[in-house]
Length: 333
Image (cartoon, rainbow, N blue to C red; front, side, top):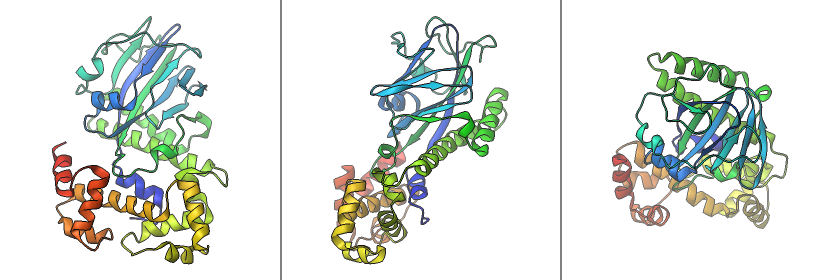
């Protein structure tokens, strides 16, 4: 692992992305994307969590999720919903989509992507020619899956809605999305892999930009990374997770008193330093279990446990399964 906790987490939670739909709209329109549990079962079975993002390729609209003011979208903008909330895209704020009890997301799961969908006076079945040349608005809808268990501090550290304006997107993001759009239209060999990597990059770039935008003193895990002392403590725990850390050792390394570090760490992350370390060790252990055939006893030592039994007890508390059982379940998923 690197000494960059954000990169560590992004690697360990298995990002998997794909662009699924070209959606074209005319007139007054509204389209609803269900919450993560339904999206996961429909699009990426076995995924812990699925988040959606939408690129306004043509035209304008609004994006909304309950509890947050609607966001005005312009051509070239991206809106992302990291927490996987049900959300609505519409031609005007306050519009809601017509009820849709169809199962087309399930029945088209394995069809070649992207799938064209038309919202012209209601939802039409996939397969409509598209993106329609006469459509006022065209949106590329992408989805990214990631693990939330045993430990993913990033998802809840991001806001419910992230609006990435066209003018603020980095050149890499813009170029990659342009290439992904071209690949998806031409259905060239390897285009599916390009689409998947593009979706993953959009999420990573959004997380980085949000981290860079946080003011000093922000709370949450990403705010903690920006904090001089707590951020250094988290980097040390990620750099040397197997070390027998104590709060006293950690406080000495970062130049704070034991009590001050503990209080500041809890204030920003919502958990004590040693609890964070235990959670991160479980996430590392899960990654190692999934990646290869190393013995559980070896993995236990690699993540800082003196015995296989102690690691197995801690792992079962967090996942509900012993390590070997969890590994078999992941392989079968």
